[in-house]
Length: 280
Image (cartoon, rainbow, N blue to C red; front, side, top):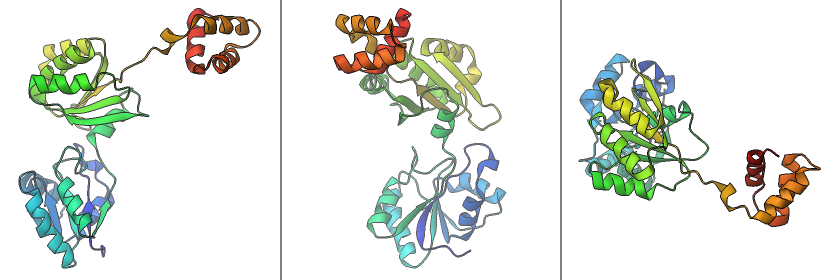
């Protein structure tokens, strides 16, 4: 297989080795060089699939300097792949500076689709997935965590965090403090691996479970929080309620809500929800 000269972004499994794509294996076999977050860790994965391509380390401490060396390889006509320890590179992993510099130098960056812990966990969480915000790891120190969570307290999107096992209890406690004990959360642990678990419910209940079960304090964790909910029915004026009641005597509630909303400049869904609560 002849690859065009480019930097290839290649996702690797987050647990189950069967999740690697045939295209990923093909690219890793045919590039001239693989930039790895940790060559020893990636060496085990590459060896499993019989990939003998030359490796080089690219991590947080050397990325800026190493990027220019990789660009030189591209200028020599060599194709290069970037992988992280697990999942999609750049998602809470090194690679941002490399990709930026490679693009600025005028070379193509070709991404492959593949495993990502955040998206995989979200798809099975039962939380709204039409709008979400990936926030990476929460700050290690309590004040930083609380400041971050407080700033996100009224964000309506589903919030997604990565968390380490030794900090999960502290992070759940911070969510209780900043977002309230009733905020719905889902904690996905060891996704795609043998001991995969999902805990869901009010954050105070999930926290109690995690404290009691030390197994929940092990492995890799994706922590997801339901976004802030706004009760739109609280601000419906009395005159609009009266209009809704009158119209609903002659029309189906959905139609009555639409007309009342148009008359009073309100959201029809909020009026419809309010009508259901009234039993109209």
